[in-house]
Image 1 (tube, helix red, strand yellow):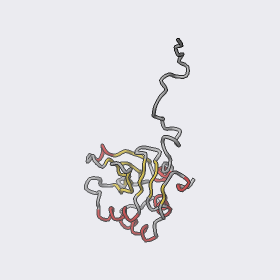
Image 2 (image 1 turned 180 degrees about the horizontal axis):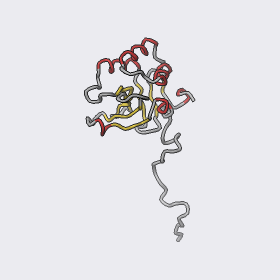
Image 3 (image 1 turned 135 degrees about the horizontal axis):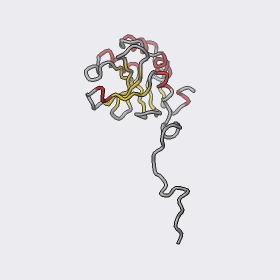
Image 4 (image 1 turned 60 degrees about the horizontal axis):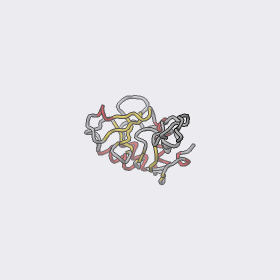
Length: 160
């Protein structure tokens, strides 16, 4: 299923020059599925099936500029910020270790890096599967929260 078939506010795809600028700005090879996503929708937003439950994907140009200027390096070294949840958490690629780049959420308000990291997906392929999926309505493994009935169906009610 394409991301465009999901609950996702898409924008026009990134240009070849924007993708090339991004590749040059980031010290590690970026995942092909991430670059393919940017070619399809250079930014956008929608639900995420796992905490932090929402993704605002940054355009390639914004990610490239932040990486080139080392905007997040002081407090969040070893991460390439690719977006946010729109409410205080960055969404980032973890470039600290070799191998597939895990996708994580980082609490923007907590400078204790190890405390503030929340794993989302072990790689970008797994992350793609979470994009545009509402955890409360589309994800069968998510516990549904909300008003509970006062009486279970099997609870006898008193009749006067």
